[in-house]
Image (cartoon, rainbow, N blue to C red):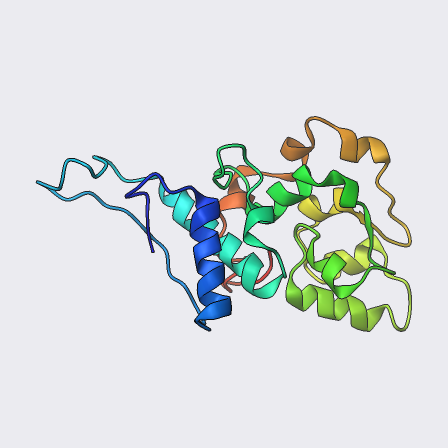
Length: 196
């Protein structure tokens, strides 16, 4: 899908992708930021949308395909577009603070997938480990979850974020860093698209 050539909001783009997945059984939808060409039709915009918008659509698409999110719940902004400054999963968590904190020692697979900074692989490991013992904050760090993003949203055997943390107006700035949001690869050079 070409993104930014029309005024179509991100929620409509994601709903179309969701329909293609469910009705047409497509395995993958690709997004490309619109790029203007010389002497184009006057109805087309004269400049490209921010490239980060394409990246956010891929992240949101990943949430729909592997994390059980629906298109209309991912987009929390009033203009019906994804937030450009934070990833869609964190934006959802900030807009749905009533869902948190999630107890990693009792939550279901689906609930664990909603935690920012915790991916599918980590959720499977959490479920495996907690059969034998309760998880602690150090265990989550060893699993390489993005602890800075995760800590405000989880309960562990030794970590209990106060309700005041979830109610903080500046929570977004406390759980994000500019470098963390735009990272495509981890320190080992592996793609991090699966661990949102």
